[in-house]
Length: 400
Ligand SMILES: Nc1ncnc2c1ncn2[C@@H]1O[C@H](COP(=O)(O)OP(=O)(O)O)[C@@H](O)[C@H]1O
Ligand SMILES: [Mg+2]
Image (cartoon, rainbow, N blue to C red; front, side, top):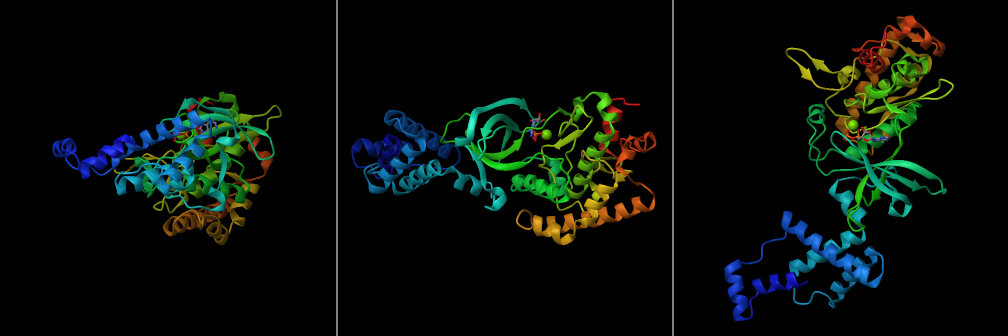
């Protein structure tokens, strides 16, 4: 508050000393950028101090301060614009979600509703792994039914600097990362391809205090091991072939260009059943990818597309073929309409059409197999590093 009174004195100097101070320092500068950030930090510290002194919740303290500024008991004599800013900052502390959704340009829809907040957190977030790019936290939460769950929380950023995404048409200044993740999960559910981590929105304090939480994605913690680190014999299991191929098909449809072997997990159960979980579904649905094979890495003399995908799979099974053929363009549009823009939805429609045609061509070539044929060595050997994730992983793990 003292700082705000100083600013008021510099703008409207009353005493001789204030006039000199104003002349030496100039009029107070507008509170923007770092100046604003520093101001927000000061107000936050004040609110935390009020909370501690009154032994009340930090947001309640911020709300009382706001009421005080509004009724004039707090902040008398400060500049009108500072008063406005102070009120705004305090409101952001009281209801951080509102302001963070706005900052990320994230629409309020049934799928982006906050599923978890600090009230659900049983074990505070820790940072077990450093992603190549994003900070990711592990935590335990209790859901609405009282069930304790292991989760992963990935805070969202206002601006992304992903050059790979840019090539596909994902804008850097409004990347809509949350919507891309949520759209992937919705589409996977519709297709019955249970191969990506369920993802919702959460507002969680990751260590900067209750008045500075992050808005981010909260996901189930994937079982098993990242594909990069699995035992080679895992990559020979029929169920793993099938599940990894499902993930690959989903990625062709979503235009996912970041499915390197750190971005999916494989878990094999005691009976040989396999669970594949795709994570990090950020870089997908770019408007420039109109064909399902466009996610493949290309490194030729005249073209370099550093994507982490592959060409289309050489074989699929009957249930996968059915999933693709039964998804109509209308289904696709209705799932994506509140999540992505028109160009992105059109590109997805075009990838779906391409994928349907590809399924027909596989069928005609006798490459749509029965589920028990995943064990057939002749089937398995068709999978190469170029045409499939499983083939690529087998080559890098030297599975013969
Ligand atoms: N749902 C999840 N389950 C388990 N581990 C995860 C999950 N999400 C992220 N991780 C871990 O955090 C790391 C970074 O997350 P990721 O989403 O891939 O971030 P980045 O965009 O930086 O690559 C992953 O490589 C993985 O080790
Ligand atoms: Mg990643």
